[in-house]
Length: 168
Image (cartoon, rainbow, N blue to C red):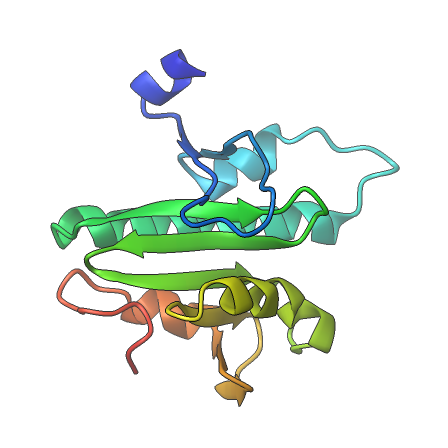
């Protein structure tokens, strides 16, 4: 894995465990440098559901954009993910002086209540965070304190000059 990272073919994202109130996963997540490479290299067979790996590719694309936003904006922040031992997960956590966001990425055109479960759990443990759900729909929504944004709009607006990943 270190060779792959040294060649800039992929990157690992550690588990967010600051002030953890629950037992978290122990292993980092891995993303290829490019979502298209992931889609090509991922083994496919009759038991694999296309939506499953398309969602992972979309999540990887968002992680790549957030890494670029941090690097090109010279921000003091890092990317993590959060997963409890019981399986509750938030795809991406951005944490540092630049801000504190919990980001869930869904490859669906509608927001369902079960899509918000991980963000609600994380926000209960970390009320300081700003929870965001990115999805393939077209509406901006606010459900309880969770902002739901179209992923394409989010990615187009994520520029190094922006101070926040969640600003309009």
